[in-house]
Length: 157
Image 1: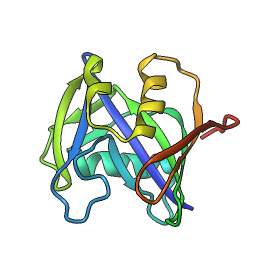
Image 2: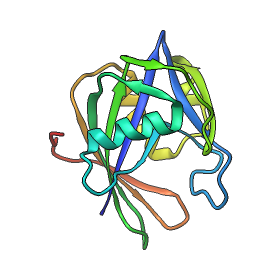
Image 3: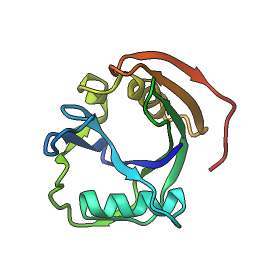
C-alpha cells in the first residue's frame, strides 16, 4: 500500500485547490484536488503533508488538523493509504505549481468542480465542519469508475 498525504489550505471561506493540468500521463488530469503526494521514506504522514504543501504552493503550514484516512482501492493498481489534513494556519507567498493551476475556490463552489467521485464523499464530510476524523475505503475499477464508498472503523493519525 502506497502511503500518501493530502491537505486543504483554507482562508476566508475559500480552499486552495489544484487543477491538474500540467503533467503528462497524469491520472488526475483535469481534476481538482488538494495538495499532497507520496510520503517519502522516513517521513511521517504529517511531515509528508508539510513538505508537499511547501513544494506545491510555497506556503508553510504552521499547524495541520487531522481530518481522516482514505483507502483508495483500485482493480489491478497498487492501493493507497492517504492521511488527510486541513490548515487555516499558514504563512508565506503562494508560488506557481509545476503540477497544475492553483486557485482559491469559495467553499460553496467546491462540490461543483470536476472532482473524483470518491473525493466528493470525503469533501462533503469536511465541508460540514464536523471535526471527527473519518475513515473511508474508496473502491475504483481500472477505468476510474467509483464502485463503492465504505465507512471503516475510525483510525487515529
